[in-house]
Length: 88
Image (cartoon, rainbow, N blue to C red; front, side):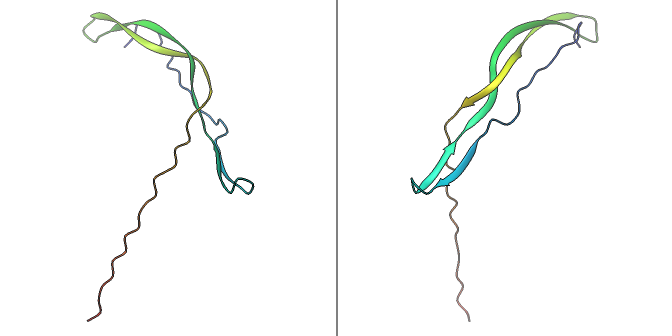
């Protein structure tokens, strides 16, 4: 338990990722972005153990989130294996 309340921050949300077929290019066009931390701060908090002992713990606090372009990775094609049985 900490001596003071600790705010744990997260990033999440939609960043407009899409994939669509282009008639002009005759291929798929993709735009991939992900929501992630843009600015962080390392913070310290004093932790108190059930036996009353104390220790310092540091953690990363997210100050700001944003959308960042990322590589669009094409999923690997799944091979379908078909087996044939002979009729007896």
